[in-house]
Each structure stands twice: as structure tokens, then as C-alpha cells.
Image 1 (tube, rainbow, N blue to C red):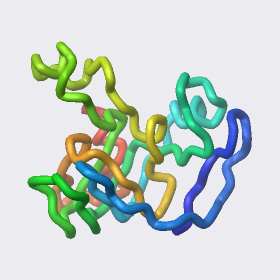
Image 2 (image 1 turned 45 degrees about the vertical axis):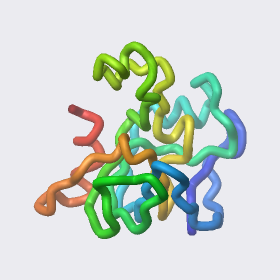
Image 3 (image 1 turned 135 degrees about the vertical axis):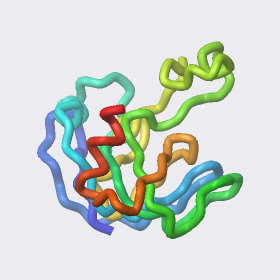
Length: 149
């Protein structure tokens, strides 16, 4: 698959060929139809978020279609239109998660920072980070709406 990646902090984007990722336990694989561009992607490019492993594929405004489901995933099936935003998953175990306050998870993962994002033809994401996209909403319109609340 083609992907736009950053190989090190401050580097330019590189268009590269990568293997199509396989979804691991608890993940879905999305065939990306669109991915919005956000200013925080510049921070990924410049290495301004702590803990980024490079090379990294940015992009946290993903819209596409599930094409594979990893083991342990319930409620999502291939063919469903979905999106993934900034919130890239939570631990379910910290105090905030136990209270249902997932966006304040002490171990929150961020799409395009803690795992590769949507500047690629395919992306894998934790199932709990995925949201359904209505059929009447075009993929190019969906990405930024996922992160806008």
C-alpha cells in the first residue's frame, strides 16, 4: 500500500510502499477513503508530541470502510463505513475509564501518534476508537466531523 510517512522528527513527508497491515486483537482494518489534515499533524511531523516512534504515518481524521476485523472484535463487520478521530483508544482500567470518562483515560492512545494514522491506503485502529459513518455522508466530509464532536 502507499503511505505518507515521516521518518524522523523534522523530516519531510515521504511517499512509501508498505505492506498492508493486519489487524491485531481488538482492532479493525480500514480501507481509507479520506483523511482530513489537521494542524496537529505538523506537530507529529516536527516531533513535538512526546513518545512518537518513527517512522510514523500521521492522520487522525480517517473515513473509510472496514475490510478486516481482528480477533476479539464484536460489533464491527467488513463493509461497514467508519471513521477514527483523535481518540485512538483507551485502557478500560484506569479511574477515568471505570467511570465511563474515556476521553480522559490515563493511558489514552492517539491516532497518528501512538499508532499509524490515515495518510495511507489502509489503517488499523482499536475497535473502541471506531465510529459509524452514515451512508448519506461523503467520506471527504466525514473526517473532520469525527473530531469536531
